[in-house]
Structure formats: structure tokens, C-alpha cells
Figure 1 (cartoon, rainbow, N blue to C red):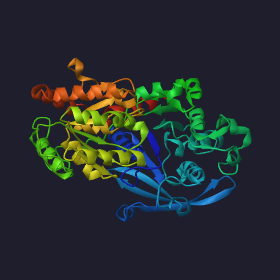
Figure 2 (figure 1 turned 120 degrees about the vertical axis):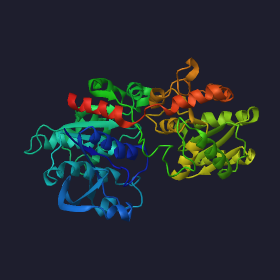
Figure 3 (figure 1 turned 90 degrees about the vertical axis):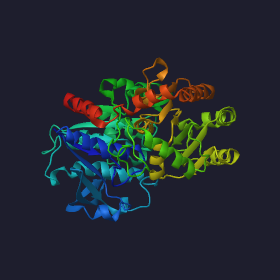
Length: 471
């Protein structure tokens, strides 16, 4: 079986979020399961020079973008045994950022069409084209409406994965034909609530639709979660399946991680205490080894549950011996809130605004507890990384958080959970975790159980392979 994995970002080349982690890890896991999986993504101007040096130019073609034809250079690179195709067009992709431009619709229509156009030129015909999020949503539409009957394109199946249903690729009808090149008589495939909706088109045209956790697959059938797409998802629910993401267990390994200060394992936890002391020092906290250190590594935006944290953090700091570290960036109101809390609780609260991967690894390794009270979380990777490093997660039961963290109140779980999106319920879960921490023997059993959880891609890759075979 041969799978072409199409994504707008992928590690190690370019990343802005969790999609890049998945596109960098899942194809490697599939390849280890003897599936021929290759990745295709744009060749962005911001890709590091040392990565560019490893690329080999294959050929150049032109790609239709409605009535225009645009240059596309095809480059090949190999990382960890996996082949990557990077598609070059400097007008579309030599920019400072990946997203956020007025012509994003045209940029990614070019990419979605190019994914299909390159197939005769790479000497490798896929059985499956696996597309991800709205940036590649037009690929299944183009395949169904233009390519399925062409020589060399027979019997290809398309899969579309929804990583976050909030971002759907919505545009006005005026660009349906002029930019996307979809004839008006086929516009019904993309029409939704008076707009052109690229994600809706992919749901309509793909042979299978997946999300990044089983619970999220259930949630997006509900109007509260679906951002308006629940009717088409319910109508096409026979296509829909939730498969929980995994993490790269080689990158996130406390026994070998080069970014942390002392290595440790479930069998020998001595190094975790060293990492905690170093983290307390780095973040300006009091050197108190027996005080529970709680962490958040997150985007500072509302759907991460930060309004719950803002409502209860002062009370928790005043009524417990909690220490806390926060790393992230986002909305100005939350950045200002956490800075204010750091000023109010010196020696107990440490805050860094920004995206600092090395510090994130040290926080996972040095913290005792990891707080993730998200309003919505399609999958989430941070809670899985926290488990790997023996930092016990506190999560709300939503999306992939519900699927990967079970409450330890029954003596079998790996963390602490709460169901309602309520600040006091979150605070109660925090207090339960702090109470558990005060029982060293029980806490050691809990951290051992957490670190032995298997959140690798091995299981998820097997689920994807079963799904591929089913179509």
C-alpha cells in the first residue's frame, strides 16, 4: 500500500502547531509498519538552509490555478528514511509566515492542485492521498471532479483528516471559478450556509473522513463543537472515524532527551528531582523540593480554558502551597494576567511569554503536575508528553484529553479529570491532585503508571492502516 500524506506543514521542515508534529511522526510510524508513505508539503522560504541543502531537484511543472498556470518546482528530501516532496513557488510560499495572508485561499488551492499534478512526475503512484485540514481540502474535490477519470489516476482513494474544525476555509462564491477553478455547476459540493466552504467540500468528496481522537469525532456531530458543520457530518457519518494521535517517543524520552538537565526513567526517578530543582532556579521559584510544582505549556487563548484559570488561580495560590510555571504566548489579556500573577506571587509563580521548545522540555521534566483545562481539545499532545515525563495531568474531559487521561480516583487512572466547564470543578481537581501529591507512596505509583502509558504512534498507525484498507 502506498500513501501520499499531504500537509501544509511538517517537521522537521516547518511548523506552527500540532499538525506539523503529526505530519512528521505518523508517516514514519506507517513506514515502520511496511506501508509506503511519503509526505508532500510546500517549500516555504523560512525552511532552514541546512535542510534545503539536503533537497534534490526533480523537475518543474506548471499547475492550473483556475484560468492561470503557475510554476511548481518539485524537490525531494529524505528524513529518517521517509521521502518528502517539497513544492516550490516563491510567489506563494516565500513569505515570512505560513498562514495569515489575504490570498491564502489561492495559495493553498495551488498546493492542493499541485499534490495531484506531481503524481506523473515522481515515478510513484499512491493508492491513498491523505489530506489534512482546510489547506488541502480541495485535493479530494479536484480528484473527484477533474482527475478520477484521467489515465494514471485510476482507483486512488482520498482521506481527509480534521485536526481543528474551527478553521474551515470559508470564502465568497465570487472566487469559486476564478480562483479555485471549480465550475459553477459543481459548486454545490463546496456550498455551505451561503459560502464556499473548503472543509465541507472535502467531507463531501473524500472516501473517508477522520479526526484526531474518538471523542472529538463524537463531539463534532454536536452544534456546540462543530462551528456549523454538524449537519453534513451527520449526513456523512458513515465516513467518519476518530483515531487518537500519538507522540514521537524518541523526541520525548526522559532517558535520552538532550534538552533536559538530568535523565531519568520510571525505574529510577532520581533525575526528576534534579530537573525540578533546576527548573525552580531557572524560573525564579523558591527551592522547595517537597512543594508541588504545577505547569502549563500552552497557547494563551480562551479555548485552552484560561478563563477558568484566571477565575481560580488567585484563590488556589492563597489557599495552598502550590508553585506554578507557565510558558506560552497568545492573547494580550492572558499574557498580562500571568505577568500580573508572577508579580503578585514572587518565588511561587514563574512565567515566560513566548515559544521556547527547550524550556518546554525542561518544564515537562521538572514539573510534578500539568494543568490542561481546555474548553475544546481535538486531541492535544501536551498531556501525552506530560505523562511520558511523569508530570501528572489535570484535564477537562473533552476530545483527546478524555481519550488519553483517566481519573485516578478509582486507583487505575493516570491523572485527574473534571467534566463540566466550570472553574470550581477545575479547582477541585487541582486540590485532589495536591492531596495526592502529599502521599509519596501513592504518588510514586501514579507517576510510574503515567510513564508506562503507551502514547506512541504504533497503535494509531495500526488504526490508520485498517482504515486505509477499508476504502
